Image 1 (cartoon, one colour):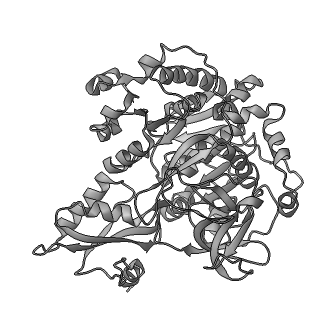
Image 2 (cartoon, rainbow, N blue to C red):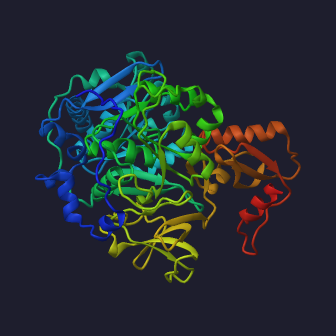
Image 3 (cartoon, rainbow, N blue to C red):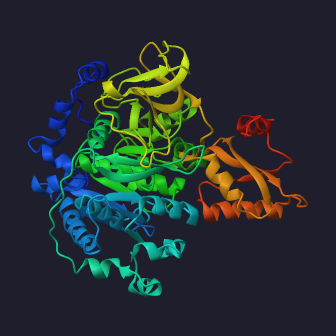
Length: 567
């Protein structure tokens, strides 16, 4: 089967009431809906997302459509992924990789990345993403914590591992000359020598298949192991919130180096047996528009930042308004989805008027996946600005500071009632970095208000997490990296409101005695953070001050710095 082409009409189905489905939710029925007569398929993520589709006669269905930076398109069927992932799994096994070991990639959105993910799962090993914008410190910390056994990367990113390759096996996805330069195994050369069959390793549903890290305000990023028990929750989101159909051309623009892209651009669509689209080019409004037109994308997932950048670019004004279906310069979108931060009324209206579809706001975390959504596939009220309703299989409450449930209309911390949430899978951080639970409640750390219609409304974080361009950045990571500069005595990082990115990062810096601030020094600090931490987490503004505001116990009062910046 080739990727589906949108017809001018969409087959209508009788709407499913969110209230009916939510109140009558049954996990056994859901598992039957997903896995049918083969419930053991959920005991290996490769079987759940690829192997069962091949077994059940869908080997020729297209799993991936990939477009590289030169515009060349590659299509891979589930059968081709099955063969390639078997070869890479055999390669990993020859390296000594076993169930529970971590295997990582630092690659752009390429077919090789997807093959390595499936190969890792096939062995019962755990896939660990490394975002291509990470610097040395971010990479080393994650690899040290996870004891990463193998890393697949390319020439563009290989230098970041210069001092790390001694502790792990490196595989070069590139030319043989690139591999020889670094002394790495060459992906294509060595993979092609491997057998094309290998039996998947069955685990139990508590076993992990993804190793994530999430930013916090105190200390380093926290480890999040995602167990196989998450697969039903991923399905719920894809089927009932995203409303993914087997006729959709589905493009999730999120990078699979982060949770939303890895969960819902790879795992989710493949779990449903639906084609996923990769655009290797970095974000650009014109490229985004052309990609959607060229591939007749019908179902889109993105972030508010991306939608705002599309809007501000003006390039979507050039699209044809021809309704005859004959124009080649016309969008085919049926629906759009947004996650990462709250959508405002202006963006919602722009999506409907310029992209020609409804956009739904959806909320989640690296720890939990999506838990509160405006559902395309379930009927309920969708007031603009709302996070939506609880995802089926999840019971949500609002708590005060004493962990007491608040009535509708009052702001408090959003929490998941674990014992009443059969689809909820998070059980704690990988290395117990933080206690995330209070009795029967998982605490999200987000301040939310519930309305009488059952909808939830986001108010903000109860900590100092910075949301910039859809990424969560912990201020401590930025501050610690700034402190590596020899001229810096103290530093604090805060988010500054920005029309396009939501927030940008600003560093307040106290210099050591005898050193004066300058534009050159500010640029050095920016460059240091970009190189050591990440290209998305560096401060776009540096301000030198005499002292940081602190509590009597010495804690930085970042809220005062945010107020200072606003003034």
